[in-house]
Length: 598
Ligand code: GLU
Image (cartoon, rainbow, N blue to C red; front, side, top):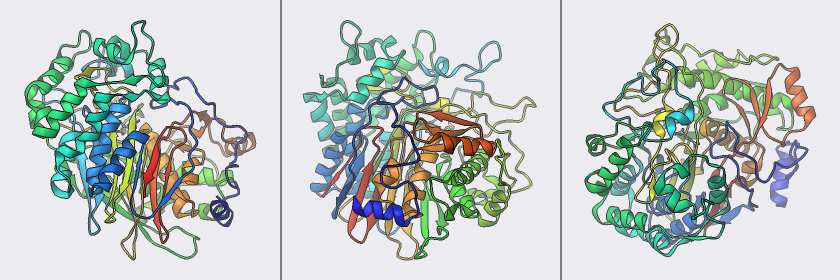
């Protein structure tokens, strides 16, 4: 702890250890906040983790244990991530599972690759999927609960693709920890219990009601030993037959029936959509970053997920724009630092709304996504920041044809899990995995929940003038994401220095960027960096984590023209960092994650 305090002090972070610019601690349990993915649950004590050989950081101790067991058995980071993901789908069903999608970044010591397991829209949908008969867009949960927003799941096929290339242990063996837990039972955790208690929709699905609630309709108690034999049998089949057990045949048919036969909100997912699903291998989006004013000077390469995710572009923009301001001379406790951060965030979110969508459907401005993160472009964007808040930023124009689309209105996004792994050979992985909202579409099939990922598309296809939104619904398209699995490398040596990511809807971008800024600029280890209060802007109000910032701090921002809103922010950061002493890891105290390893 002393080392961390020292790091804080030397980094001029005038918050000192654990005493951030806050007056009170956040409430232990808060009601579901309208903006908050999954709502908040009890905070856990996270002490951080150190080791030398390998590390697994996931959102649940049982998933981290499964990953560690597979690494001990000689598996690669990919093997461990697959085993951990299967356990997460069982013990943290509100966030991810075989009915959802994921983005995975992997570095094998030489190259970094991006595996895209994003859900896709069925072939028969059109851009009016979320428009009602009266011409108005549906309310979020009106669209989400049922079959309408269910996209073709992507995570299993994506993991199979990654395993074929980078796995070492037999595919079937990776499912053993999850199958065992599903058959023997696992204790219901506090977070699952809290979310079951507050969710008004899940119990409407008979299969989910029978699994998650007792005969009196009460959510299963904390510690209840929950068995899921149906999921165990699905996992056994995927283990034996590969992903086709999920995408063809009777399990796929059960998914399709559930979607199409929903009594009041059916969807259009078909067997043909299931069979046609293909994960994509993409080139990660990497940007150079040399934090200003940090001695010794050190250059990094920050690699993140390219479109259809908006994560890497937004993070590179925020860090790049911040670097053009005097922010690097300021401590976190200075409201001026927060002014610069949230102004940079506004500029980044304006571009995100304007440009980012599935690259197979929408061209990047000036022919390359890099046009949005080039140093000259970011310097020009930074010059728009003045002493007073701009409140709402307009998108930049990296090329003359940049006006082909209209900006997408900001929408809610929810419910996800992040895991980071480094194996004994130094291979590094960052994967963020999701069924979108907490408990997804609230449709349970064979022991797992279906995603509602299509609600990450713009509900409105055009603006009032009829100009299309880049991220509108189209057949076979992948919805834009905010997921931000990130690997950072020392630019000179090529060594991995950080693997990180978070759930949290659009705020994922801010949670992850906070972690990167605090580790790279202020020299914090992952745990104290994760513990910092959260903040951000989605190009509207300045958002601060409830109860973590002093009234004088908030007043100073208001004096600069910020509309400040204090909101519950349930980040779920997981991170592993490497330095000359080995690995350090951190998990978010706002959830129940755990870093384990040797
Ligand atoms: N569906 C969101 C996305 O893909 C993630 C939701 C969340 O983490 O809460 O960006």
